[in-house]
Every structure is written in structure tokens, then in C-alpha cells.
Picture (cartoon, one colour):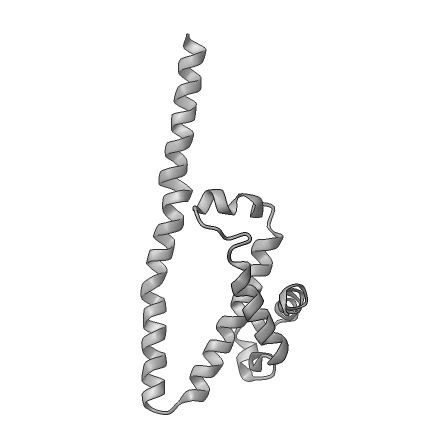
Length: 142
């Protein structure tokens, strides 16, 4: 009886730890990220109003590169098989449609970040970043 009670308590503790730990944290992280992303969108709108499209374009190109690098790192992770269950989202294969779109764009349009001063400030401009982008483009571009 004591062993059964211990097993039940362990299962409840694990479920609670998941909910309040990773599961809840994942969704809270997405919510917390909304404010900085909103400010970025605000800055883009302000740049559009001032016809400063070049700065906005460079920022968006960097977002594309960071998405490709992030996908590469996520897909190479040992935890990748557990991402769907842990997040409650259809990341694999559901989000691959987004990566295919980005990879196809990057295949047809070289990243300006790789040839500009921006490359010195952003990880997408490093050799490792370029390698990861090239791998995702090769694997997913149409």
C-alpha cells in the first residue's frame, strides 16, 4: 500500500511539475515575448511613416535568418521529439510550412546581413550562423 501511495504521489508531483514548470513556462514565455515584438512592430510602423524602409528591411531580413537558425538548433536538439507534447503545439511537422516559406525566400534572396556591417553585430553573420542557414535552406527550400 505504501508503495502504491508513493507511486501515485510521484505521478502527481511529475504532472504538477510539468504544468507549473515547462508547460506553463512555455506559454508564459510566448506571452512575455509579445511586448518586445509589439515594440519592434511599432518601430517598423514609425520607419514606414518616415520612408526609412532600408532599416526596416534589414531588421526583417535578420528575423528571417534568426528563424532559420532557431529551427536548425531546435531540429538538431535531442529534445526535439518531445517538443509537441511539452508545448501542446504542433511544432513538428506543423511549423515546417513556415520554415519552407522562409527557406525558399532565403534561397532566392541572399541575406543582406551576411554582407553588411550588421553581420558583425548579429549571430546570423557568423560562419556557424551561415552554415545553419544554408543547411535549413538546403533541406526545406522548394
